[in-house]
Length: 459
Image (cartoon, rainbow, N blue to C red; front, side):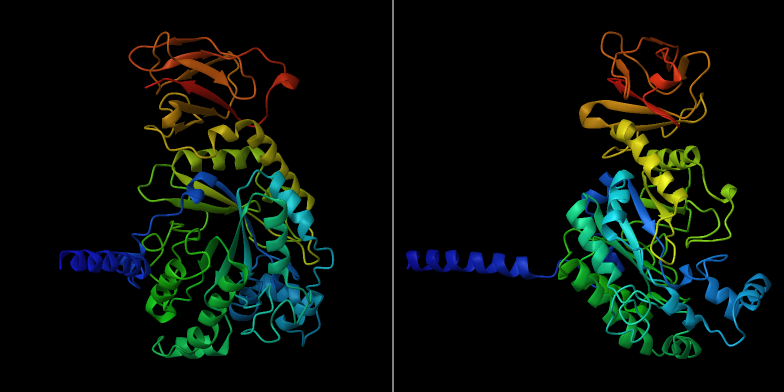
């Protein structure tokens, strides 16, 4: 009798274990979904590239919101632009055949993105205009396979990124579409109807994830509708429990009105969000090299672009405060990354080759910036007992005072990344150290636009 009970117990235990393993760990509630740990790779990556590309790249005037500003808001400069350059009966849809992407070379893009030092990329698979950069089954005659390029842009870039780089591949997706008749019908019912998400948005999102397996799913554009209209929690439960990217995918916080900075994976809070202080939740600063537009603009002036010094400062400040930087470029209608964007990407990569140790896989330190010397930001690697002091101005005196670290005589070591030799330092009372920087000519500098000191064994 005892042996039978023992045998039955042995049979039951694996079955119970199997049932526990098969049980969906995440329920379609924000309480459950928000408890999902963020996959570790995202915090370690620190730096990604955003790419805004679509039919809006054809007029390439003013903003990627061109259609809305011209047709809906009727802003004078957009109305005038159309009147001056296109026939009176020209519609926004007529831009689609002109979106040729004839010079688009996914391998070339991948090379540039790899050279930038970024660890992930996010492509706009569909912006608010509704045009999909793949042959969506739910966007008939308004997608890159049927109109314009006649190519699966998403697939080409996905293959190039995964074959030629170490970047994680991600996709942006706009939930709503400005002028889709089903969305407008739902909106007129105060979103009591759900025709648009049921017949368009949700099937398209499932298709996108299954087909391209993005490791970042960057949702946007709730159109003023709450998350229950979009059925966001059910979709995210499927994404986290059953999808092919359930173990690695990260999501943001734009899943319906009221969700931003509150629910989802990491927080974006607003475009160009950069709080300047440590947050308790992982966040991302999505910003664009062109200060006024996410899409390419033919009418941009040189002063409209951030300098590399300004971009390095954004990266350093963001990472020191626990965030990731998602830096945007806008390709042209024919698929080229313009020289100004390519230069900024390659400059950032050059800087990260020297200073990446102080950025990638780091953690915020007890102080995010120095309280005495301006433009000094801190990161850390606690396991290695390392603190990095990233300074954006080389002091004319050749001495850099750091007000936060406390040195330990005989234990603390200070090195300049890219230089390698130990530097002399002295303690200051009650806190801080004075570091004697190496006397280097400009060609001897390990890099431009900012430098990093590796401090070992400081408190």
